[in-house]
Image (cartoon, rainbow, N blue to C red; front, side, top):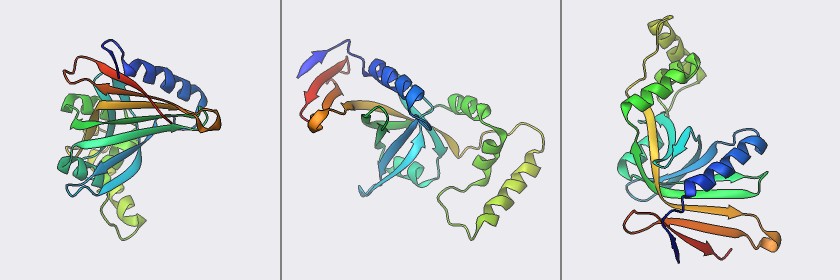
Amino acid sequence: MGHEAHAVPFDLFDVWFNDAKNKEKPYPDAMTLATADAQGRPSARIVLLKEFDQRGFVFYTNYESRKGSQLGENSFAALCFHWKSLEKCVRIEGAVTRVDAAESDEYFASRPRGSQLGAWASTQSRAMTGRFDLEKRVAEFTAKFGLGKVPRPEHWGGFRLVPDRIEFWAEGKFRLHDRQLYSRDANDAGWDVQKLFP
């Protein structure tokens, strides 16, 4: 195992992500989010990456959704990006925390008004009798807020996955893929870097 205190996987992710934004259409920011409940039962879905930096990878959702509830029970999760056109994949694992309210407010304010109203109207992951249930709630909140500012609902905001493992996978001929694993070292002072067998 090699130790590279200055090796920053976020720089490599930035290079790959920018390449994906140029070549992977649509949704280069789409990532699989895997969570598990308190009993360890897993669930996976696609969410969109909204920002990343050395603090971690951020996505937004309804805190009362299934994924939000599972993260409340078990704060560990995994992300997976698959960019087919690049023949590359990034796997990320770590603990998840809520972003602060000011950060969620700022992102919510940048969303289109229809998406803001949708955050109020959708009781995400709960059953409805038909599409009209949702349309009725959208109409109710449209009337409630009129032409004024739509505030962020308390049940909606961001999560940040703080990685302790990031694996970069690149397609190789004859399935001899290139795999490089970054793991936070024991003192959280840097990253250990390993090449893995495909």
